Length: 313
Ligand SMILES: [Mg+2]
Image (cartoon, rainbow, N blue to C red; front, side, top):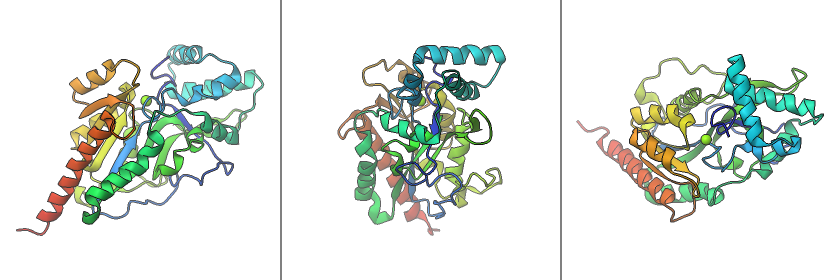
């Protein structure tokens, strides 16, 4: 399958009231990270290949159309190269063009329902609460807490239907406009480099997408310093995010399918893109669990050191 052209890293966001969950606290919400105390830790995840083994469209959308995923992603790559079109816009367009050709109507509610079929790596469901518990144990007395964020090129709608959706403080993903055109039209497309905008939004506490992110904000006014971030990703599409964090004192962990080659992770590690890499096994006691806790320990210690030094001199 094609790594970029609509493959890994492309998600859609569904749910127009038909979702089992409340609407994400994300889009359009006023920032929930208003406190500038710098005691919040942000764990930021890619989705496809990081929390889930395969691109989310492969679990229900493509099977519903009777299309072989490999062929679909290959066509996305071919078309986007031939047309010199953005790979993500191409995949979002082709998905619905194919559905129309086959006479299959898939609305927002259908996409949300598809989220239930998305498979997650072992331990993912319990992971979020376990991270809260770990940070509480080590850092609660210093007032340190943790938040989970998802930044994905995939579809908001499908993510909204997954069991883990309620664990995220915010979800930033690609999304369709369902009523403006005959075929659903991309409302928001989140590219590899575009992902970094959302890291800045979390960093500056400006999560409302209606507000500009570009105004200058001095470092000491930013509620979640980059040094409090850990980013989880699985490949080249995560390089801009990992690079931004590593250059700004943040942290990153690369993951790979536990049953598959770790070569990509080794490459990222050697290039200094990540602090660690591990199989995508989120269960307690796994390498990923232990290495994440090590980084949390370091972040918690750094927050405490800053607190202790504050006001001295
Ligand atoms: Mg990915």
